[in-house]
Image (cartoon, rainbow, N blue to C red; front, side, top):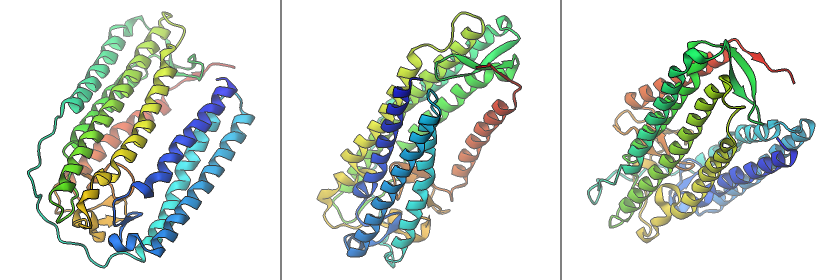
Length: 375
């Protein structure tokens, strides 16, 4: 990879990721402070301002440290994506520490009780599942195309096949031909694409978090946000599936000598996917706010009901645990999007199944015998 390109990717990735992190307090629902319900009055108080200021200072420091590490590694290893990956990994490791500090400070001013839950003021209108279902179909179709193509050409593959490609789209790791070495990437395309598509469908039916009394304004805001979020995730699914399918097909073609490596479309598709994911997240955050909070301004001073306001149901402000709640997905208390109800056995089973499959594929990839191409 060209050093200038590597530098641009490093800076661009940090700026986009950092921008999302820095705006989180500005898009949060009224009354929520770093995963803690402090009520509307508490969120406007001097102590809340001080805690929020500490978040900004901490995140700016984390961004500077991550950029410095990434720059140093990029200069030490020109042509490798190590700097960008390390900087984003370090930022991802430092962010929870900054959040935990702010969360623990916010707990000191937590609201003593939560407003009672209320029934929805209007029926939960069924929104379209067209895009989520298209995403599920794309995941299944892309995975099946990858599997069928690899299976049909399995007998034509040589004894050693490429199982990893470098930054220049050329194979740099080869493994003995086996069922797992050939089918690992196609199966990943099928599992990942389908699982993400199903997640988009579940988000479209996620639990609402409403205010009362607000004349139904928060209900409509939540429905609009859920629909936008489900459609956004569906777009990510289609792009991820397309990229994995191309990689799978061209891995087989490269092994048979029909292609020199991955097609030039792969880095462009990756850039489009990252731009869409980060740009879409910023757009949704600024347009809708957390859970549609920016659409709730006409609700006046109506407080959140205990779907989000009950501090006893949230662990560290990030993990929702409620055995009495049948919901699978609920709105995040801090951050953007949705999270699982860790008190629901079905949600735990869904997460465990996905993690087992993912880790099994990772272990298979790690322990496959392989040989690296000498530089």
